[in-house]
Amino acid sequence: MEFSDRLKNLPPQFFATLVQKVAKAVAEGRDVINLGQGNPDQPTPDHIVQALSSAAQSPLSHKYSPFRGINELKQAAVDFYSREYDVNIDPNKEVAVLFGTKIGLVELPLAMMNEKELMLLPDPGYPDYLSGVGLANVQFDTMPLLEENAFLPDYKQLTPDQKEAARLMYLNYPNNPTGASATLEFFQETVELAKENDIAIVHDFAYGGIGFDGKKPISFLQAKGAKEVGIEMYTLSKTYNMAGWRVGFAVGNSKMIEAINIIQDHLFVSLFPAIQSAAAEALNGSQECVEELVALYEKRRNTFIEACRKIGWNVKAPEGSFFAWLPVPNGYTSEQFADILLEKADVAVAAGNGFGKHGEGYVRIGLLVDEDRLIEAVDRIEKLELF
Ligand SMILES: Cc1ncc(COP(=O)(O)O)c(C=O)c1O
Image 1 (cartoon, rainbow, N blue to C red):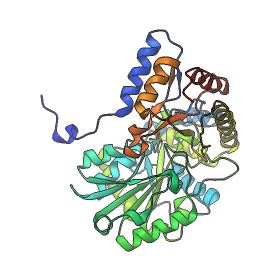
Image 2 (image 1 turned 90 degrees about the vertical axis):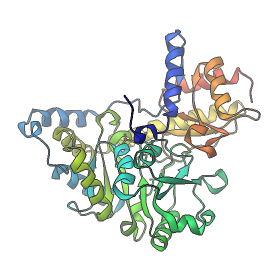
Image 3 (image 1 turned 180 degrees about the vertical axis):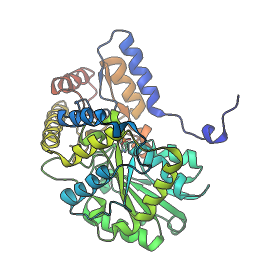
Image 4 (image 1 turned 60 degrees about the vertical axis):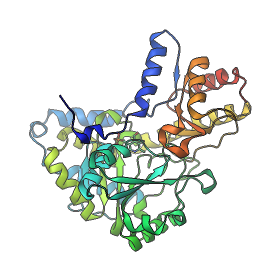
């Protein structure tokens, strides 16, 4: 049997190779410190699990959900944006409930673009953006995120043809993989560019809950006029350690929200209602768990960065997200360096080129193991005498 051209179009999952390499090393009995992946290590806070448990008892949860999600969750998203970002959202027209944001990011090119039209993506960037490109059979150009520009795209580098052709642009701050954050000025510049060139903007706010040094990450919707040109995707996976639950939402421009809702009307009957109720509890309940989580990641970040600098590895501290983006030593490619760390130190990291051409020269680590394991990882790397 033959697969469709659409399926054959899909890019290989770069990180599947890393998962295999790590699994092989573990199967050989090696004590691998896995800093390669982005799976939160802490449990979902108890009050959210309790909310699921009691909502699961209700017969209302056993029926089909309304197609476009339950009002309780949409209202919770509205209240969350009002409380956290002082942004007003209409629960009826400006919220779409998602099975995690990965699905929304993959759906949008299908919902808003015709084949061969152009979208703009950050490089380095979250590899799953390319899944939407492949399924919708659209073209993409990349916007380099360079250290000298604080890992923000330089819109002056876009050609008139690119600006004319682009229909959709993805951005993501705090950024995976670089850990950089955005400024309000940058988002304002983005709104102006979008208005002048009729480009729809999607801000992927996956790490919106995780900012360090007392700096709360900025929402794209805080920029003036943002709702006229774009939406923001918010996931509960990271802020509330709910990656396995598959729940998130998109808020903003009503046309783009409608596009997502129409495609979802044909694909799903929304999420298990009890998960939606628990998600509403996460967004509206006590936020102490978020403060504790950010403090935990910040402590790990400080410990890790200090240890790296002590061995002569000149690394920058991330401003948000739970990743650190580290330069590889001279003479190695990202992949060679990642392979050496796994083979000789039993430390797994993600090679930067997996996130795009401009990720070459870096590796990404996740701050998703305890501090003592982070220190041990750096101790093992020190013994390789590469710095
Ligand atoms: C930048 C970014 N966007 C989106 C996602 C998807 O998150 P989810 O589908 O769990 O909402 C991730 C997950 O790792 C991510 O790193």
